[in-house]
Length: 517
Image (cartoon, rainbow, N blue to C red; front, side, top):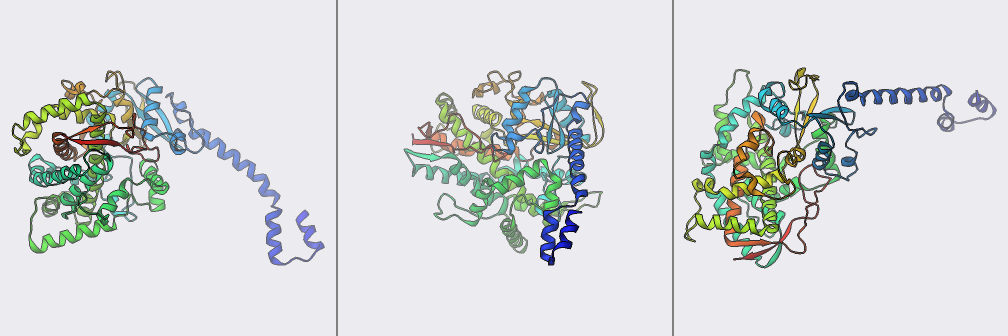
């Protein structure tokens, strides 16, 4: 009424008319708007009452972020936040919300075992999903694949991580470990960044083993393109944090926005070039490139699936990302903890010297399994700093938890928080204490009862766990045999994890003083 009278009293051009329409909105719209807000409010409250309606204890959600407000706001690392929630609740499980999606968080080791092992067929898929058309590298990776593709690929790839196959790459590990030793000698009595040392070691290793190229990160003065990709893997930016969060919690948004886990153009080119040379010349290096070529030749299954070149590149990049950052963290945190605990360092050095009665004696692959105390140290580091913040599974069909009778509805995502389980005093005495001795006689007990989960559990555990531990052990042996690492005024104690990364990335680095023996 007001608008029509105003228009009759004065001449207006079309541009002014459009402005007037915005300035004086239709009263019908004004009437509908409160109703829409009310409907949205009721709908959100209905979603956020999912666990309450089922009688499950839950963490009170915020409007948009759900139960992860501290993570969204950058106040708390996602792994530590889930660990906090784990310790807040009692009982075998509790509920949380992530952007409106209900998640069931498991606390009971018995239920963890049911989900990951006994009833694995109903929880065989992770909650991650990726549109292969948007990101063919991530979409074809073993980490994200779903059945039946996952099972077919997993069976074939398992054969390339046997001890015999890894042993073929052992000379490469020794060569690069010697590069680390020479690098350390040039920085004697200096403060070094352990993350820099460990990432260079892993850069050279994954380049040789997974892509068949030689990178000398400890010698090169300039950052090579391959080294830059390795740096980008752990580089924390707002956009990368957003992408990783979507991959972990909002897989539908990954497909909708066509997000990519990592820019893999350069890695793809490198692998394809190496593949082309190998196929033309028949040259063999007994590395993962050769093993993947053999998988492609022998791949066969009853579902008509194929293991083509795209799949080969995808697995190589998956191994690169997982192997690089997992092993890099493991190596850096192991040296860091040894710098804080000289008594453990000395005990480990005695074990190493015992294995090398003669300084010129080479390290043999078959001797690695005899480093008992080193295994205990690594196990304790993995307990304290697991690479993944949680395990996740998707409930394939309605499932009744035998211990309680609660029915998990089809499609419900499941979380198993690493920090919560690994720091539970019911399973680990004085969990905040670095104590390798806890694994002397109890390692099999911890794994069999599903309270030790650094590489996952069940058929969908990490396929490269043995490789990651072997390459870490080689470097640790070379370092501790010749050097000591000491706490200095720049060494963080305790470590504060960067809340913008889902992985255990130290906020202020891991600096220690290096001294040659």
